[in-house]
Length: 357
Image (cartoon, rainbow, N blue to C red; front, side):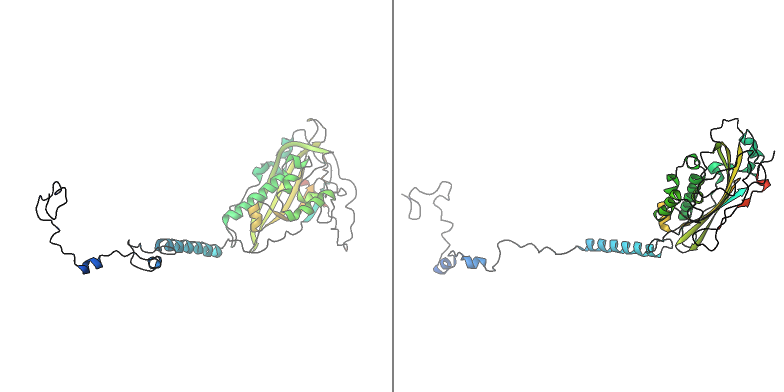
């Protein structure tokens, strides 16, 4: 049997083998035992604030970090600077309502020849012996001046306005489908919407009242009597830009067009004659017109011949052709005190404006 301090089966294998127990020197007195007694917290005590078993993480910071706050401030500063510079920019569109287009004021003056209208089988011969000999052909005769900025419009805006005017001139005086085909849409789409009603009324009810002359908007021949003898129309003229007010740009177009015509249905052997149209057009642009590529036509002054003074040139132009003479009599009289009609005007076509044989 083992000793008094050993288990019945003897000392454990690998133990100190009969040596003195390593814990034998430790004395567990009563105070130590009481202090070592296990104590379990009640539920309420566990809910109370006592020392946690693990280290608490520092609380997460609420709101933006310093870097995010700096980034937000930089973005706000840049945005505010952009707004400030936009307001200070001299070409910025003011927060004003778009200007309403003025009604078009038209004047069409027929020019009657003194004698017979000269003609020739070859249109080139007529051109070479007329003042149009040095004119350019078609759109090449509508040259744009150098675009410069004004007090309230940039160079780009001025150039855009000039481009729009040139396009209007080409469509309204050089397009064959407009001249003799009765097409009007190519011209109408370049006008602002608030001028469409007046334009449409001019087409449906043309009148020499200073506002509803079709030939004030465009050049249109009576296709029942004439046709183009040469599609290469001669053109020469000028364009000028001015700023009438801080919100309005004005472009003045002054061009002379010379057309070679033959009787409708006639073959190429029939004699051709020349017909001249002088157009002075005034266009107005606000910034919205410039942006939309449209033009307000405010004034149209037209001289055209050879024509008979008694013809209604407000609807279509009925040119006198080779060998023809003007009808006797002057324009139909009008009442100068009437406010709804313009006084009829007719002139004499100078002999120097006709080809020489």
